[in-house]
Length: 180
Ligand code: IMP
Image (cartoon, rainbow, N blue to C red; front, side):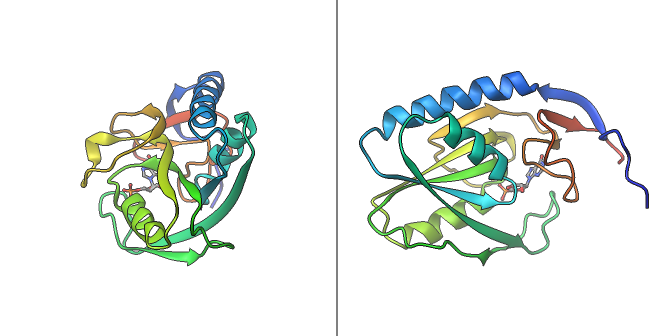
């Protein structure tokens, strides 16, 4: 199978400049809210790795990072499945101020599972920051403390988001072409 040299893009939703600008605004808001506290940011691999890196580099307070990886069962986009932790955190989070870092919150099932799991480990506080929020497909109500963009119901790639593990490294966020 050959890989297309040009990504299968219908149009660019947010340019690199627009993403950077929002990332800096959200980084400033988080830095202000957690000033003087000992914040740990938890990235969900692999999608949120690019966002977590950009966000923490733009923050002005010291921050710790850790990662977990999940795997989903029956996880096509239109049949959100069960989620389990495939790689757990390296360190406990008891008594810590924790922000879960997501690439996109769609149905909310993944985030809810992760928030419930992390809440069971007795952090001092627990919140969520997501690059993209697609509230139109939400299946369960979920409070989101920080987000960069709300998006309509398009499948998007870039800035960590993949299609079949590709295109995470695009510097912009793009709507995928239909019928790929
Ligand atoms: P949720 O559990 O339905 O909220 O799904 C969250 C996960 O689905 C994200 O972390 C992504 O891995 C994946 N996902 C949802 N929408 C998209 C998209 O538009 N592009 C790429 N991945 C997506």
